Length: 354
Image (cartoon, rainbow, N blue to C red; front, top):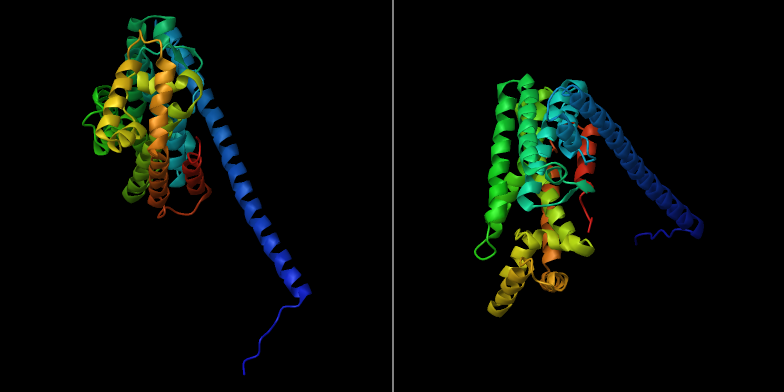
């Protein structure tokens, strides 16, 4: 007959203590890793800010210098140059050697923001008057063009393949932006929406990671892995932005809806609606885009209620998780380094922000 062994109370308590100790160690490890990532992020961003300031100071003889300085040195997340540097370091590269490339991507991104504010007629950018409001539309257009030229000039230092990749990503971005302002709610599919944000948002992230890997001396397979990371991260980033526009308090909820921009939560809720509900959504959107309508806040809240009822925010969260999972999975073949962990931390930082 088999012998059954019972744990004494002392042994059981000892087991619990060991388990608690192990959990504390795991938690401490994760906390240490997050702290290291935050420190890396803060220091690298500070270096990027310093290098941007040096770059702008060298342009002091340009007539557009005040406008360029205003646009470039406004506080931003600097995610694209961070991704260039982190991708280079994850394949064994040196950040100093890819810094000009990192700045090229930030200048390209800044150019799109300057032009976007004109298209959307936005009056504020990062808590300050948009460039076209502080100066003029003409000044803003020319400043954006100058930033694109500067971006191309910086990228040209890294050879034909990288220069072509930067140019191609800029073309995809323009095409995606055009889709963004022309997609109608009726007839717009989820597939069309994802095609739009792959161009509008993900193209620069994808190119930043890919070019960073190449400039850092990575192999073609490593560069492809990082390109996949960048694209999926960029898609998740745009989806998160869509959710934040809908869940911020105050007039922020009006921004995308009033501009007639179609986002995934709206596409999903519209597709899940009955014929009568679809007509109601269309009527409310027309009302919301009417500048003379005095009920804009109430109308926006009504649309939000429909989006909530249809489970569209949860659906969007699931899509974010899917793309972040794909981003992390795509770099599984990279060597295990602190920089690979930081890439995973970047993806993790986009979760649960609403």
